[in-house]
Structures are given as structure tokens and as C-alpha cells.
Amino acid sequence: MAVIRGSILTSPHAQTFLAAAVDLSGRSTGVTPAQLNQSVPQQAPAARIFGPAAEMARPLSWWDLFTWWHVAAMSWPTAGGNRAHQGPVFLPWHRLYLRRLEQAIQAVSGDPNAALPYWDWSADGALATAAQPNAPIWSLQGPPRGQVAAGPLAQFRVRLTQAAGRLVVGPPRRIWRDAARGVPGLPRPNDQAWTLADGLYDGPPWNLDADSFRNKVEGWQDPREDLRRPEPHMHNRVHVWVGGDMGPGSSPNDPVFFLNHCNVDRLWEAWMRRRGRTYLPGAGQGPAGQRATDPLFSIVWPSMTPAQVLDPTESGLDWYRYDALPA
Amino acid sequence: MEYSEPTPEPVDELDELIRGFAESGYAPDGAEVEDDQPHEHDHGHGADGSVRRFEYRGHEVEIVTRYEVTIDGEPWQGQMVVRVDGTVTYHGLPQYAVPSAVDLVRGVIDTGYEAPEEVLEAIRAAREEE
Image 1 (cartoon, rainbow over the protein chains, first blue to last red):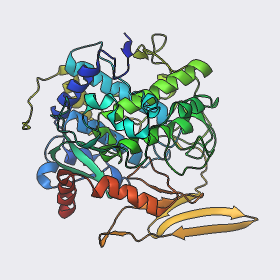
Image 2 (cartoon, chains in turn cyan, orange):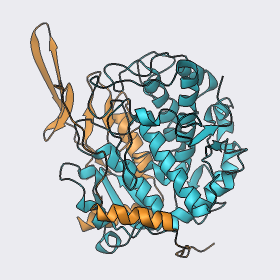
Image 3 (cartoon, rainbow over the protein chains, first blue to last red):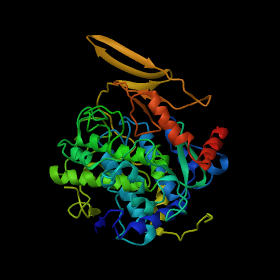
Image 4 (cartoon, helix red, strand yellow):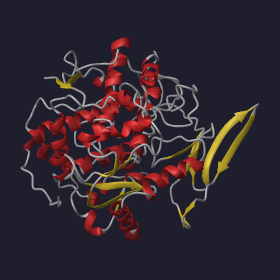
């Protein structure tokens, strides 16, 4: 049965999401960093976890395992390059990843209707930049600056951090944010409209130089300066604007990561409503690992392909739909 | 409020998933893909630095850029990659493709060196173990 994803400000599942995040951050998987390292090839040093012996032998939480999944997907040595970013699979890979977290939330909450909320950040981007850190989302998610020590995430803890080219493990710690330091403001409504107006899902060279919807929503193209990238945009800009734990590859540490990507997925749904459920590159086109029939990088759950995740609604996978899509 | 290690009730569905993951040797699914096309690598990273390759009027060009970065007098170990258009990327900050190494190092400091003490302590402890 498809669940209904709504805005973090209005969704009846917002509190379930936050409570489940705390639960999953304290729920052991029984899998230690040392055990995960057994599966990491020598050619993938960025997916390897480093830390004191006691921390390497201590099982990770479910939330930490999702964070490792993200780092591993962008670090694994395959012909397909980055298996989560900077290419066509950016959208389908994150769709599958978010759905698996949604299923984990349903499991721990016992609520089969629980749905991920999204953060409509372009609505906050319409505010004056000085007002954006005071937007209502931060009264729900904890403060946008400093460590999150109060609110529904006061007991939320993480252990993995990517820093100086290494993924390190330590004792449970609070997440932290540093809003509006990296860039002054969030993406604006006209940036979103410019992104949705692109009729091509993706195209050669299939990376952060492509002139395409995928590349625009990921944030490698500047709406004001065409293909130049003096600063991050759209999805990338949200990461950089929040800062702190949202900066490095371990960014799923912050539950706001999922609110950001849920909104990105919502924009993809809005784009497909206009353009049809199409994906490029197809079989025999483009780089390996990025094609419609190539497997998406997965742990714990079986892999799927981009073609298999194109329709999450009642007419397809029956996973979820959105309460509202941008016009 | 003080933090205490939680002991949540078991959830059979998740326990079963993690058993299967352990039985697979913690191996990812879908990691390997068949590569049946030749590649033209226009940039990359080797031991001696970031390499850009291109052809111009029949001439094969290779530009190697090597950065030596210190922060507060200590060597910084990250590897920056210069793209053909001159922008600089770094695997550890996946949302950045910035005009210069200076911009990138500012991001490194914002996210790594200005973190709260308990984050820095975990990074230091891991480094001492290497």
C-alpha cells in the first residue's frame, strides 16, 4: 500500500520520523566496523572505517549502517565511477536508499503508514537570507547552528565521520550544523522552476558537465550563469547551506539529509509527471553502472535497477506518493 | 538530558535482514557492473597529483597538478582533483566543485576543523590508531 509523503511542517508522520531516527540511532545492527571492512576491497580506501580497536569492535547502529552505505556507494571501485552522485543514477539510487530507510522506520515504529517527510526548501529560499535559519523546520529538527542537544533529536547519536579522506568511527556523539556559512541562502523558487523546465533527464557526458534535469537538480549547473559552477545549487546547495555533518560524504548522519533528498525525489516525480517516466541512459548507452538496467549499489536489501524504481506510486511499485507536487 | 545507551525491543524484520547481510559476508549487492565500453579518462588522480589529459590540434597534452596543503602547519592528507575546466573537487566534500583550491580548503576547514570537540576527538583518536 502506497504511503503518502508530506511536508515536514504538516505531515502526520513527522514525529514518527523523528522518533524512529532516534530509535535507529540507538538500535544495534550487531555488525562492527571491523566486519564491514572485511568486504571492502583494497582499492576502496574511502569506504574503509578507521578507529581505535574498541570502537572497531563495537557494533554500529542501523542509522550508522545507512551512513556507511552512502559512503560505500560513492567510494566503491567499479567501472561505473561514483554509484550515487555526479551521474544519472543520482536520482534512482537515492530513491531506493530512502525507501529502505522508510521501510526501517515502518518496522521500528510498527506503523505501516509511516512515510518520510520532505523539506520544501525552496519555500524557505524565498525568505530573506537572514530569516532562513529561523524558518519553522528548525523548531522541529533542532537548531540550525551548533550541536543538536535539544528537541526531538536530543537523544540522537551517530558514530561515523568522514574527515581528511578517512571514514572514522568513535563513541556515540551528537550531530552538528553550521547553517548559512558555506553559502548565504537556500535555493529559490525560480531556481526550482528553471530546473523543472529542462526536458532532458540526462545526456552525454553523463557527469557534472551534462546539460540536463538530473544535473540541474543535483546542483552542478548555475541557473544564472549557464554551465559555470562558482558555487553549489539545488540539492548540493542545501547540503552546503546546512553545513556541519551535512557537508562530508557521511552526511546521512543528519536526519535533514533525508528531508532534503525526499524533496529532491519529489521534484523528480514532478518532472516525470510532465515528461513521462523515462530514464537515460538506456541499455547499451552511457557509462556502465549508470544505465537503466544496471544494478544500484545496495547493502542489506537486494539491489534493484533504475528502470525498476521509476514508478513508486500505486500504478507501479505501490511504495508511496506525494501529497503535493510543484506545478 | 544525559545520554544513556538504549536497549530497544527487537524487530524481527530487521533482525532477519541483518542475518542475511552477515551470511553474505557483508558484501554489497549490485556492486559489480559489466563494462563493455572503452573509456577516455580526461582527468584522474595518481600518486604524483591530479592529471588532466586532452588533445588540441593533434597534440596530446597532459597537465599534472600537485597540491601540498598544510593547515595550522600540519599536512592535510586529502586528495584534490582538478577537472578539465579548472574547477577543483575533493571526494570528502561531494557537493563541491569550486573555482580554486582555496575555496575548497575553506570548505574543509568549515566542516572538519571547526567541528565541535567531540567530533574532533573522534578524528584524532582514529588518526593515532593508524
